[in-house]
Image (cartoon, rainbow, N blue to C red):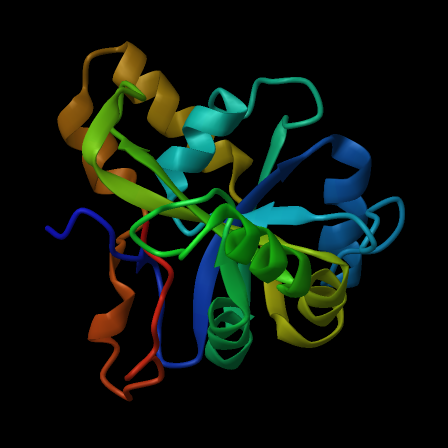
Length: 199
């Protein structure tokens, strides 16, 4: 496994990303099929293709205002646009010629990406990385208005897997995880030639 590669649940039409919210935003998004008020598209919102990283971030859907985990299926074209218009959220001397060059790119980019340690069933950090994609106002509006195909509530799945882990049944817990695989293996070549920022 490469240290930095996008692994996700996907098919030929969509890619699944995850977000966690409180009940009001989650209920209204599920009813509308996209995010509506009180969700604020003028603020940066982070989407995560990794289910287990979402579990780490939300504490298995137990943290305040993260009690509901949503699986959002978005178009490949939307994700590609986000990645094509992204900048690393932090300076890297392997990528940027100077701090000034990075700051200028960051200011001009509607999307930020960062690579954080992937997590296992016990939410322990792993050697390989999972991508987090931050959508600024322009990208967030595209996300809400154009990219989202469907939204599903996977909070019960999060609780089920967590209960299995707590009971020591990691074999069954593993089988319940969403099947995530390298996105660049997509047969139709939607991401061929794409340069994803990797610090």
